[in-house]
Image (cartoon, rainbow, N blue to C red; front, side, top):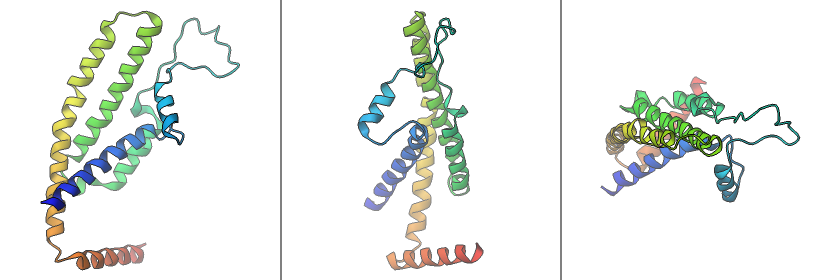
Length: 182
């Protein structure tokens, strides 16, 4: 029972770190303080020496996550990982998490417009409730089913071995087979 809870926690941590590593990999420097500073930066920043008088009130907004290079890298990683060949609900979980990040970007854009363009407060409020009620709400049952599938498959796989020696030998034979096939 302890093994399955630990492996379940490890799977959750790996999944969440992969999603957020792809989310923040393009903009994070190295120190935790710089991460906090970059998250709290306003979205509309101009380069040094750039003439802002020609914009006439235009506020550049943050693009949706699915249109960035970080998403393309994360998507390629998950395609190569091929989770759907072993586990059920993997695509549903990952897509709902990615679209939740998209909804968060739209919320930040609405907050930027609300603060700088003096728009009505209802727009960010409706966007926040949409964030909670759509993809975030869908991600909870989808990811629970996905992690339950991971737990079931990996518990069955682990119980099929007679000990740690069998796991090590299977790993070595798998590596040998991959080297010969390459």
